[in-house]
Length: 153
Image (cartoon, rainbow, N blue to C red; front, top):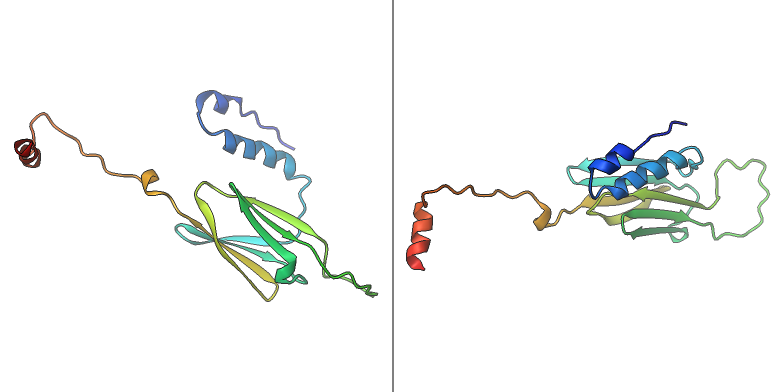
């Protein structure tokens, strides 16, 4: 396992606490993380994504999707308690909890379930106040538009 010293970044940045905490947490979590259920993360547009989880053996009623702050959590719990006698059980039916860290302004747009695949649509909606805007550069001499404004006042 590699250790990273993030101290130089802490000294020269402001407001990146969440990012550094994610990096530190992920470094420790990778070794012990479960790999069930398998999933894909796909970019479907400039500001849209889709997370697809392979949840064979689960029904939509046994799955829970929660979006809280910047974390998307998908949980699955089998409700079936019948005793079955498998000769071989290759389809896992164990409970799981999978979390995805979302960037700022990424929201869950919807989810659908088809053929054992759970698809969660995500969209990044940047508020108008956060979008880049053009700033006018003023010179010493007033423009004709500014002159009209001054005459009206």
